Amino acid sequence: MHWADKYAEQIIRKKQKEKYVVESGISPSGIVHAGNFREIMTQDLVYRALIEKGVNAVHQFVFDDYDRFRKVPKGIPEKYSEYLGMPLSSVPDPWGCHPSYAEHYEEALMQELEKMGVITSVVRMTEEYKACRYSENVRAALEKRKQIIEILNKYRSEPHPENWMPTVIYCAKCGKEVHDQEYLGEFTIKYECKCGYSEEFDFRKKGIVKLKWRVDWPMRWAYYDVDFESSGKDHQAAGGSWDTGKRIAREVFGQDPPLGPMYEFIYLKGVKEKMSSSKGNVVSVSELLKYFEPSVLRYLYTMKINKALEVPLDQDILNAYNYFDEAENAFFSGEGDDNEKRRYSLAVIGRPKEKPIRVPFSVCVNMIQITLGDTDKAINILEGRTGHLKNASEEDKKRARERLGKAWAWVNELAPEQFRFQVLEKMPSVSVPEKEAKVLEKIAGMVEKGVDGTLIQEKIREYSEEEGASVREVFRNAYMLLLGRDRGPRLGPFLASLDPAFASARLKRKA
Ligand SMILES: [Zn+2]
Ligand SMILES: [Zn+2]
Image 1 (cartoon, rainbow, N blue to C red):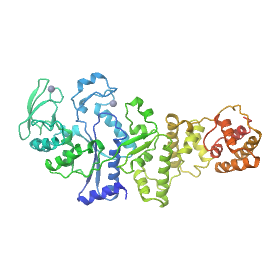
Image 2: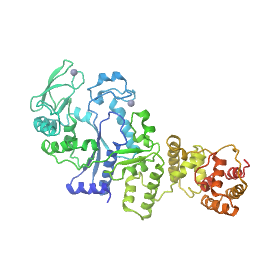
Image 3: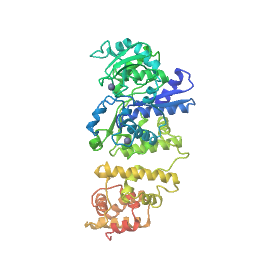
Image 4: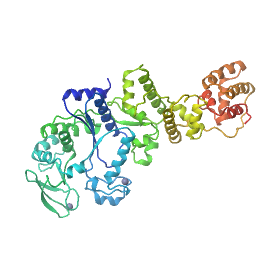
């Protein structure tokens, strides 16, 4: 059984509910790394599995935008240090295109969620806290702060002092975090800000209080009765926020913690340096989507979550596409590995009614180079000359177009040298030995007649034997004539996808 189905079953078995809650959360303080996206995807898959089991569920997506602006990141003007200590939702957008710093990153992520087919219900902590939604829970945390200190100190080398507070207060005058606060019982807090302002206020009426992360997280589990929330290694380390959160949930908020497995890291395979150099080490899902179809990327995220996920950006990207296509074949034929079929059905966005016609990524990589990035031309060749899109529907062609676009981006930006080529417009001067020249002439005859690429490939060997030529030399000369180098894509299919008149003339050294 796929892990998403296992978790869905465990969730349902644990308790009967009207609506199950799967939760993801991020602090919109920057671009979300593809690694953190694993949390969102893990939750999405469990959410899908729940829905498919016929229960009512929601994937609640929490923007922790009432979190404070902690440091000025690289690339943001230094004068932003004046906003340190304010909630992210109060810091202006450095690019000026959104009402706030938080919303700038929130929108970027929302777009990624949409592209990746992730359906969520968004909760913004600023709105909730400002509306004093959690005041009962804030009171519980304040009243039981000694217990909280004790739970947290168990894991701290430098213990929190007795007067430590679980709350962050944003000054009503200057908007920054205050450092001098006192709980006066019930719903009253007194504070004094560095700016000189001080007051006593009722936090049922004034939403300037927020719980600190380690208390805020379990508070949310309690308030929303969260059933599932996976998290990364950083939270799940011994004594991390997951460990302390479980105890705080039970002992402070009287809530059973959600099912919360750990997911492993994500690594980019092959070209890490290339992708991270200008971006300050952050590779987002948007960047990966330049090379991956969303469903293929989702398919990668359906692998076991307790294993490190390697996202291939080198030649293994060809395999990633192939595995997805194979899983799709298995799904529609009903044959093959059950787990693979399930991975496919969880991964694919807008599942097609019938098995689609897919053009292998490797074919796209070659085709788009033959047409120098012209997708329409490539589609025509795939439809007519090579037969990859024979009898294809409009939808199939649309999918092929998308894949050709990703292939073009990959070829131009990431592909290793051996995958890149350009058909020479002018014939280079290559002296072909007599026997090999005869073989090339015979091949040219086939190409001219529009013979299928696989058959051409087979015949190259046969003709070479007939003429007593070296097969290796035949290949080498053909590549030299066409590409000006001694290697290239599989020759038979490659020749079959070129313009027949051009290719045959070139093999005969006539054009
Ligand atoms: Zn903006
Ligand atoms: Zn102040």
